[in-house]
Length: 226
Image 1 (cartoon, helix red, strand yellow):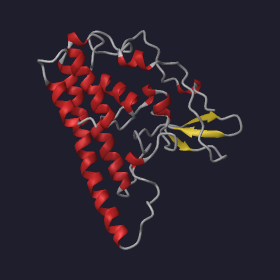
Image 2 (cartoon, helix red, strand yellow):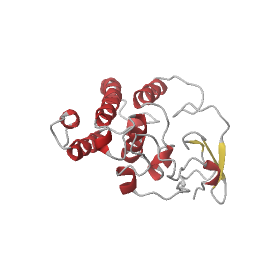
Image 3 (cartoon, helix red, strand yellow):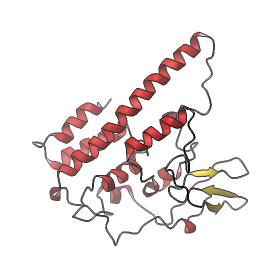
Image 4 (cartoon, one colour):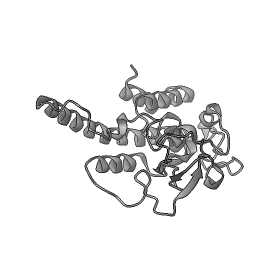
């Protein structure tokens, strides 16, 4: 199993070729990725300003892995508390897993933010540590304002499933009100994407800013569900 801390050290190692350091960042994401591997990587390219040409700013990789590391530390602390709570519950005969499950144990398809898996550009704009803190607080019973995922308090977006409607956050496409049929529906990106294009940062410019010519998938009114 890939060691997060080992891979993090590789990202920091300026003696390694840039492509090796970049691959080490990806390996860190296979261990911990709050928005899902692809969406979390897409987020880090923006938050750490990772340029299309890594040579233009090698330190961007360090900024990215440190944001990820900071979030992981917060998650590990809460996960350890949860493990201790579950152990105590089992000792008194409460073996069933409480519902809803902790945010890190939810499957992507069953979670209300499965759109991030289907369109990695729709992740929240929150820094990863802020997102983890928000989710941990909700797990502890807090009810922060706005969308549970990103905090957006704007009007919701309605999407037709062909036989009903789902209500989505206009900031991150999280499902706020599911379809009346009770089933999950696939989120269909308006702009098709490929993982290779995201991995090669086609959506970024050489100076670390978003590529103005790259199609943006933030025009939610055109996004159907099925």
